Length: 431
Image: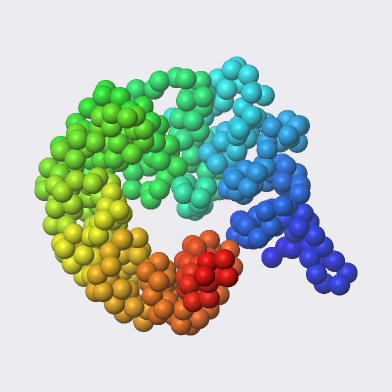
C-alpha cells in the first residue's frame, strides 16, 4: 500500500509511512496511520504534499489531526486559482483553513469567486472542451470529495476536474460576506439534484440554514407545496437544519418546525422527501412529532422506515421509550432491510429503557447475517451491562483496522467488562 520499508522489511518510521500513504493517495491508510499514532511529526509537510497532489480529502484529514496550514509557505502549496480549477471544495477549503485565510487578500478571494462562478455557469464539460480542444468522450466518475460529501469527476484530454465549483463559489462568497439570494443559491444546489450528498447541495443548505432568519425560513417553507419533489426536498432540508443550527436561548424555530413537519408528513408522497421530514420530526421532543413519525413504521420504502428508526430516540434519551416507540423499534429490528435493522439496533442501544424485551431483541440480533447489525446489537447489550455481549464480541473478532465505528462499538464491551470486574473485585479503599 505504498508504506516506506527499511532494510529489514519494517516500516522505517511514522513520518515516512504517512508521507508514502499521502503520495500514494491512499486515504484509508492515511486515516489508519493518523488514528493509530496521535504524535506524528511532519503533519505540515504531509499536508503540503496532499495539497500539491490535489488530494483534498487527505488534506482535510490531516487538518483534523492537527496539521496547521498557517505553518506552510505559500510557495509550497497550490495557487488559489488552481484549487478553484480543480473543482474540489475539500481542496479549496483546506487551502484556506484556520489561520491560512489571512494570507489571501480580498482581491485574490474576489478573483477566486469570479473563477468559480465561470466554471459553475459555463459547466465542467463545456469548459473542459474549451481548454483541451478535445472532442473525445468525457469520462465521468462519482467520487468522495471529503468525509461527508461527494462530487462527479470529469476527465478529458489529460485534464481531470470535479464539479464542486458551486460549493467553492458558496464558500468564497461567505468569506467575502456576500449575501447571495435564496433563489440563486437554490438554483445552484438544484443543478445537482438527485446526486447523493453532493458537495454543492450540502454547502448551500448549510449556508442558508446558518442564517437562522425569518426570511430564509419563509422561503424554504413555501417550497412545501412545490410540484417538484427536489424543490420540496431542498426546502425540507433547509428548514430542518435551520432549527438544528439555531443555538439561541429562544429556540424560535422549534414550534414552527413541529407544526410544518407534522402537517407535511401527512401529505408528502415522495419517499426521499418524506424521509427528510421524518428525520426532522425525530429531532423534537414533542408528542405530536413522535405520533406523526410512528405512523410511517410500515412504509414500503426503506429510507422512510430508516428515518422512523432513527427518530425514535432523538430528544427522548433521558427517559424510557414510549410503548408505541418501543413496539416500532422491536418491529424495525427485524426489518428486511439491513440498514433499517442496524439503525433500529443503534437507536435501541441509545435508549435508557430497562424493559427486558429491549435487551432480548438486541440479543436476537446477535445472529443477524450482517456484521454491522451484530456490532450495533453488541454495543447495545454492553451499554445495558448484559453479559451476552462478551461472547458475541469474541465471535465478531477484533475491529476492522481503520474503522472508528467498529472500535467504538466493540470498545464498549471492554468498558462493560471493566465495570463488571471492578464491581466483583472492589479496591481495598472501597471496601
